[in-house]
Every structure is written in structure tokens, then in C-alpha cells.
Length: 224
Image (cartoon, one colour):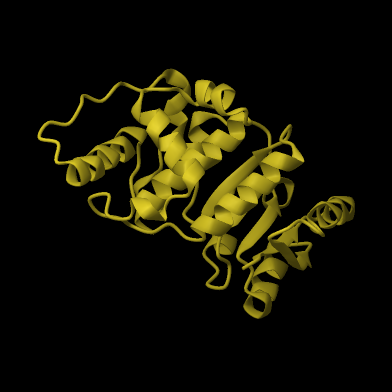
């Protein structure tokens, strides 16, 4: 099933460019275009987009994106054109914002973020690692690298993908597993493997590197 995408920006040039990028992409169906947050919510009632791609310049801050992210007919939001990806950005993402693309992000990063948000759609709470099967093959690959203590930057180099794409995947993993931190996701993976393989003692967890602390989710995002 195609991911139903709506794009939103106050700048017509940006809207036209996004339409040109998304048209014809396999697995993505462009269903609507909006020029304001209010228009997104209004059109969503009729179009029910899986993902709304929203220009950061239009919403000024992530808090302004909350009404869009919480609209019942919007599956999830990808915020486009954020100036940087610092720790406080990831830690303060409102529930429903499932991806982001920095100002220097590529088209490939945008498409990855849309696909990840389309798969996640809305964060689901999971207990005891019972829904590891809900993770994609790529997400499981990244989670296992996290389990080995590999940093986001190293994962990016190892897999040959953008660092921001790795961070989008990690954010999706945490949201799907209903946890706030990398260590909690790794603990769920260990518990899942223990149940599957009959381990008696869990291997020790490694402390995350400095560039990985920005992956943490606030409690309200994981519980949504």
C-alpha cells in the first residue's frame, strides 16, 4: 500500500519542488498540498494522509506542529528544513512527529524519513520486547549495531547512509518499542533474545557515546 503524503509550506516554490520530487516515487502517493497548518488539518479530514511533510519555516517551532501531529486523520509528521539536529531537538519532539530532515538533508534522506514515518505511522507502546517483529529489517540491523555499542556516526559510515537517516531510524525504533532511551531499547532486545534463546544472564550494557544522547525520547512521545 502506498504511503499517502501531504506537503505543507508557505512558500509556493517549496511546495512545487516537493511535488516534483514526490511524484512518481514508488510506494508514495501525493494526496494533498497545503500552505498553512490550519489548511493541513482541514484537508486531512478529507484526505487522511499517512504522513504530512511540513516546512519548519511555516510552523516556527515544534510546539506549533503539535496540532498537526495530533490531528486524528494525520498518521505522522516529518518536519523539513530544521537548522540543526541538536540533542534538545530529538529530546523534545512532540508525539506524532516521526521524522525530520535538516536544512542540508538530501532527497534520499527525505524519502527515507517519509518511509520510516509511514511504517511507524503512530508510536505504539510495547512491553517486554514482544513486538520486535514490528521493526523493519533496517531498524533491526541498526538496533543490533546499537547493542554492540556502535555510535550513530559509526553506524552511518558502516551502512553507507546519512547520519540524519540513522537518527530517524533510531527515533522510530524508540517510538515503536515505547521506550525513551537507547539503553532501554537494547535491554528489550536482550530480553527478547533471552526468551528466544534461553539465556540466563544478560550481557552488560555499554554506555552510549556523546553523539547518541540526542536519541532520547520524552515520556509523552513513547506513551502516545
